[in-house]
Image 1 (cartoon, one colour):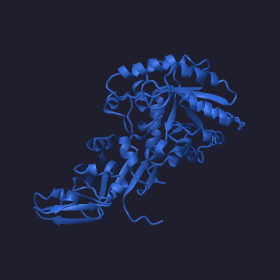
Image 2 (spheres, one colour):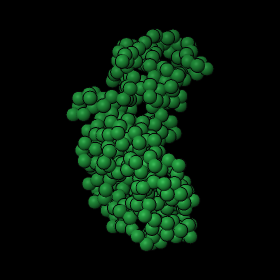
Image 3 (cartoon, helix red, strand yellow):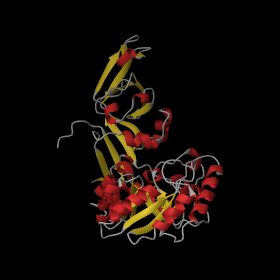
Image 4 (cartoon, helix red, strand yellow):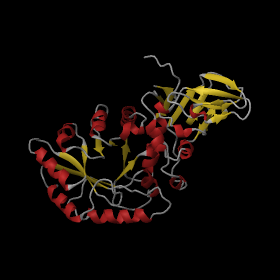
Length: 374
């Protein structure tokens, strides 16, 4: 298939595996690799398969559809769906050995009704809401009712979990509240499941030396080489390696004169005679309009994005030395140059998670292993 545009998202699989191993070495817990949202936009099938080939056997997605796609490459692994699955579709989870999240007693009752016509058990992880407020329940009476239904021969009570909402913060106050809440709610259950987990990437690093009753930790954004926050990075417990690099090339260069304007809304005016380079990436590729003004690497130069980012292209102010074909680095590492995705995200008043997820399918994902393109 022809690929005429030079824009691409490069994914370093060696760095990915290194990050997983480093995070796992922080504690003795099972690392649950979070590959939801197509591995934060980096390509879940390739990433999950690479981790699987290197011994990883525990994964999590956001939806049942994502889990079913992954089962094509990691058939004998545990795959947990973190979101709410329609009880009408639990047969697909059972047929493919997929674990589901139980968010409520109502959901569990509906599942048990569906299970009457199915001859295999449904694996579930009960979600306890300890302060995130998203899904799950904190009501003790409801949890007691869930506990009773877990005795059904149709249910495999595989796990119980919660989710920190402020583990990337500067203090532990809300984490401690959630932890205490979680441990109190766990006591309601007469049987303890195989897996107990509450830590996300931030918690994995922050509480790596804590003595607790949890045996699984969920590795998300840190797997992809990004710290959940500066607070976590400053702990100095792990040195993560960048996994994703967004690249393109200059396709056009022109000189404009002082006072000339350019771009939609004529939002940029040349303060002097200067050179403008055009790069084939825009908001249809997930390079958002609010990136205007950020400085990226064009060759070895730091060049500011000027004018509004267009749907398919953008412009940068550069020197006369920039030529058509020069490499453009938006974030990541390339040929000794580096642009921090955290800086790129912070400039746009967002986080690395969103920057990754925004990159559209129009941008090819190119995978590297042992410094060679796959």
